[in-house]
Length: 448
Image (cartoon, rainbow, N blue to C red; front, top):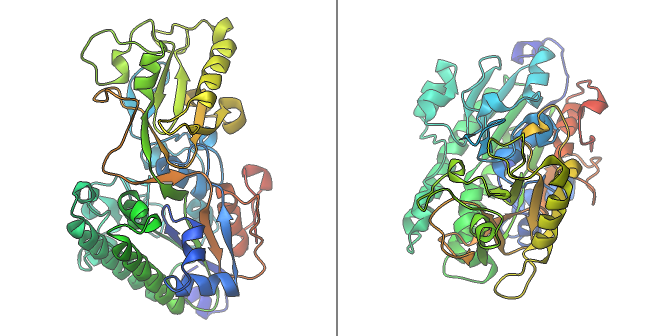
């Protein structure tokens, strides 16, 4: 449905979705003076915190949010996944997402979807109205389709992402300036197509919020040097969302959501180093930098964030754990993770989830056997080289959390409660647009 259809009487409701990657709901709730516009949506519509997914990592979260199903169905578990029957790994991209995206369902109804800056969508689809891919895209020229979109965005200062490397500097001035510039370009691109008003679903994501949280969140929580700059960035995010809200026609419902929460980071936990020290993992050579370098004696290895794989005979090429020993080994590892303490005596893991309880679907053959959900403050890492300590710190001072992700719906009848999670978003958007679907297709349920 385009603008001509609406002018001739087709009045099917529409939705504008704005993602704010990694924004915890408590940040908005605790700072109503910074978030005047989002607070207004909360008061006039519906709002609250929601849970993320297992694991709460953006590359897994956005496919889950946009499809309404778990990684066992999407086939994407994180920034790095492993090939079936191999130690080779790959970075999942848009074509690796195996479940149906919400905008594909919109297009199947003969309606139009504009999709901008959603992570894990590269290369851009050519069967939607327009798309510029998000995180992991090489640049606007390669990520935008059709040509008109590419030309427009190149004229507005639009960027795929801001420069996170600048956040590694002690002086955050350049990082903060870069974040502002990225937000400005994103708003110009979003507002251009919001005002063009030729779509039924607008789906756009602000990724800069996640970047800012990784490097400045502890400054906010502990009244650090860059707290004011942190809040200034969020004041701009709120202002831009308020201005976008004002641009929306009356037949459009605005939805704002994060893919996970955020909290301060106290300790990075290098789990492959821990597994090696505890006798679970060994390498064939002294020099090692990848999963392929593990030896035949390895019983378990880890990927970020907190994903653990048993080195199973018949599944992994050099599997050391016999199938009949799998359950015992997994239970042993789970107990070890559940009792692991950090340097300050706190438990590292809030809980440890077994594969069968988190993942189901046609693509669960590469699912991790265990996923550790950390307590706040412990960021779970898993590189295969370069870490001589289990616990240390790096340039980041903020980390993802499973809980406390933001959800706001500019509609007072939406039901956002204690059991709301990321899987509820896709069916909610379809209900708001009055698009029929089979409820059994989703792991969540509509809040509309």
